[in-house]
Image (tube, rainbow, N blue to C red; front, side, top):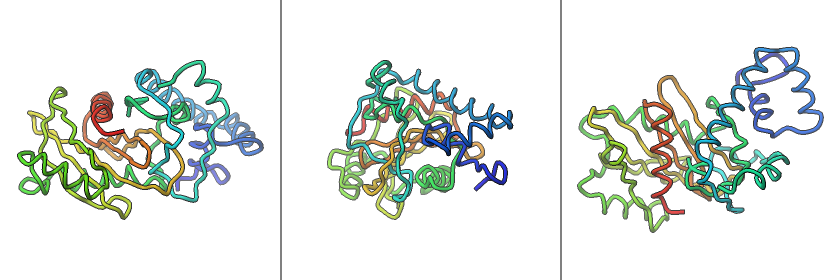
Length: 261
């Protein structure tokens, strides 16, 4: 894990920006930031980016008390900021991939953008799947688009999602290439691949993990590959591609509207 200095790790700053620290730990980070203006600026940028995401997707969110996360290990406990309850009453009752026609409370929006952290396995798996399969010419998927109904039924059974649908992204210029079964966090997962007229591809990953207990909605970046991922109940979804974040948001929102909730 990247160390900001011998006493404050990057993960601590993310937790501070996320509003997950209280008491002495939060005071310690606040004091350290006063002495480290560059880091303070970075934290402010994370919070500003989160506010931008919140503004874009306001109007899509709906809260579900059973929402749980896929992106953190079971031993990490959620510590949502108290201000979320107050802000929720004043600002939003709605989400989209605030997201995404969604099911998250305001705590979700309190998560600023995060460069991929060690403990977040789901976006990393989404990026790996994209890197492995998006460049494949002859065998990018197991089942091609001409068998879309079979693809949805097959993957739905493997993931125990009887009403799983393959998102239609044609309004955004992407047509379905097909999909495949692949492991996500050691369990069956589904990947759908899409391509535009210029040959640019993106993938949509669906994974299940009922064990985790934090809710999150974030961007993750790895070189030129961008991932936009969110949680809906026991299921996690991720859109990955070498495309703009604006387009990722649009694809994520469209996927969220079409996936079962």
